[in-house]
Length: 480
Image (cartoon, rainbow, N blue to C red; front, side, top):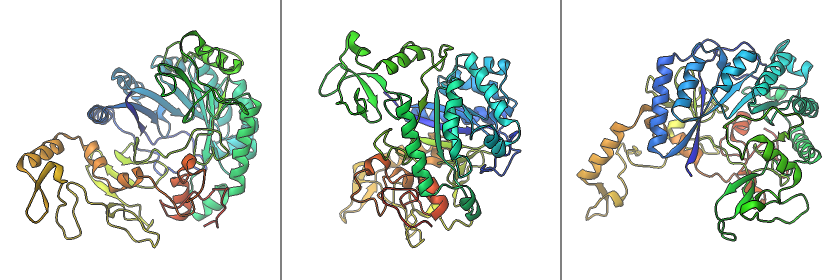
């Protein structure tokens, strides 16, 4: 099975709302269709060369404001890529929902930030009812609908009520993450304290238990072999293959007709009714009283033992493309690694005290040299030699490239797309891809579950990519 790669594509910065927590400054840019097709060609070439399965999530701004949204989305599907759509939901009527359904997206995600009064205060008067009308239209088309909730000081008390509203509108999944702020004033006004974050995590776990949800995300049936039961069909909970219910021992599902018989009734009904085992990407029967997943798969949300182990995708299998062609490792980190159309390489965010091109940032705020790789320039201004495996070793013990190896590297560089060259040449992408072991996490028995937590939330408040999560409540630390 191929590893999946995600492209979050902000095809337009235009938006019909002005959310108080929005990190967007430009509301005019959009990517013309010819450049969209050029970017799509480059992405398809990259994932083909790297043997990856591609998924493109179209977003904005508000993606439905792009004049060629449906043409681009159709081209994505024609190339066999998975398609997700991230929208505020306010522009979706029955006609638009039918056109979206014809694209067979794997999901349509709508943003809801609380009950009517709170959501409208954050996103604008009337936004809540417009978004719910959009959700209802999507569900009438049998589409899988996700709701995202941006947790901040002013709305966390409404999360439980929102969960009930989402369930009544047959939403398939409700998930939340913390707001990311970029100024001390916004941090004080919006960002969750550690105590508030802990309350949200425990509330989520309670809602999961009360709804009969067995884990932080629905168990998925996977075909294949395991060391204990070759040919078995297992049920996966995060990184575990188990049918474990609260307080019960795990068990392995046997093959054949027993596959679903050991899965608890509520989950079995969800699997059978949702279409997961019956095909049809993203399409689900229009059903009442459906199982709704309340997710706790984001950073630190699984500290209490429920939910999938978290690992940040930035630098590994996630890429952000903005409407002006800028490439970023994560939309919630303020770094641009290059531009697809100008072919500029990465630069740091002004005023952040980070020189990305130079490598890692030390605790003292200084930039450590990046590791030398093939084609990297050393401090002496010389190009680092390739490993001996692809070159010759001189009498002095120095590895040098053979002419054949040099030609092979040159040919590969020429055939690479601009997107690939920007990614492969980015020290920041390499830094983010490496495992990090923040000070304060050593010896913690939950480290494998959180991997140090959220880099973007922590960077926004501390200016460091290597510190542990500012909201870790197992081992409280001084707030920045």
